[in-house]
Length: 435
Ligand SMILES: Cc1cc2nc3c(=O)[nH]c(=O)nc-3n(C[C@H](O)[C@H](O)[C@H](O)COP(=O)(O)O)c2cc1C
Image (tube, rainbow, N blue to C red):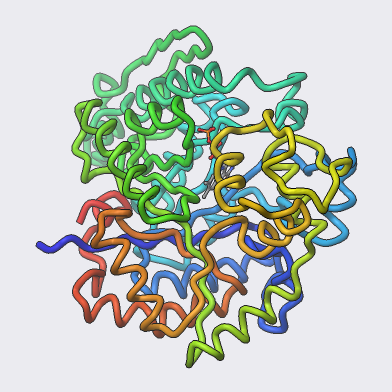
């Protein structure tokens, strides 16, 4: 069968996604960010477009890196984290049938028993459609919400993440297939010989098991990851079934994909079982000039100051005291998560901090695809066929209209070209991802 691309809808339970001004757009559902129907509507659109999944971002702090206050992140809403993703996905599971449902959960701040139980439950509720975006968290204020003064260093966080995955895998497998007998006549509900203690003991994590939730349809959720540091890639090679990235340039993406596939293979796994998906922001118009006009309008709503605050959050450095009119690469930005910093610098060469704030506010340095449906399909096909990616994380410039326009106009073109599924063939998230 010819290789087909995979699509995942990027979603935040917040007023905006990447574009920090888009909630002000007349088509935006951003003011409805607390209403579960908003997310159910998006999920239905994505499922109509045969997307592999929908992915919900999460961060466990109200950011106040910029100027030591959360004022900049609240007065104008950036990705101001609101709803807890797992509970939201449970609601979405009830109004969808095929769409993979993935949420972020931190290995540094949640215990593997909690993680394993939550995802096993979502997998049951959704009939095998759960996905876990594994993050190690990156900001000390997240740790402070969980009783710690600061996060451990990145390498230690990944060492712990390895253990959390090992422990969670043990818990998910603590119920054998066929443990549930459900024999009313003889009064036997489950076979105790098919349920096992785990007794996992690592350096950071310890759990006894068994899980209180029986084995779920997929056994374990689809493991997703977005680390781009050396240690992050090493972790991905061992565990990730889907990797998303912010790389902008085709050659960079080809190198990244080749590197990741090599690591997956070195871990004894099939490289085709790990999909590499870069994020793209979409603005669609009937003609190229209409699309550009639309993008200009959407981008005019952006707040560069909030963009700088958002960079501060991502890098973990208060940029409020830096001069806004000097080139970014001249500034000393050595702290913060390496992957994100690399991406900021890659997309911001020669730009001042104010320019970078505006660029970040527009799309968080994600390539903005502006054009007709054909132009967008051409770009996707080109990157896909050049082995720069296995598909895309689709980010709407304005939610939900960018999603619905994409599904109505770009998806049929990809299907006609034979590079995207016409229907779901798998029963579970993992089966669709591997088909
Ligand atoms: C598309 C994308 C989505 C991400 N989503 C989250 C998220 O929901 N929560 C989070 O804490 N980190 C998120 N991250 C950050 C990554 O988990 C990771 O920490 C970051 O890319 C730095 O990589 P490193 O950990 O290898 O240094 C995301 C990164 C990317 C590129």
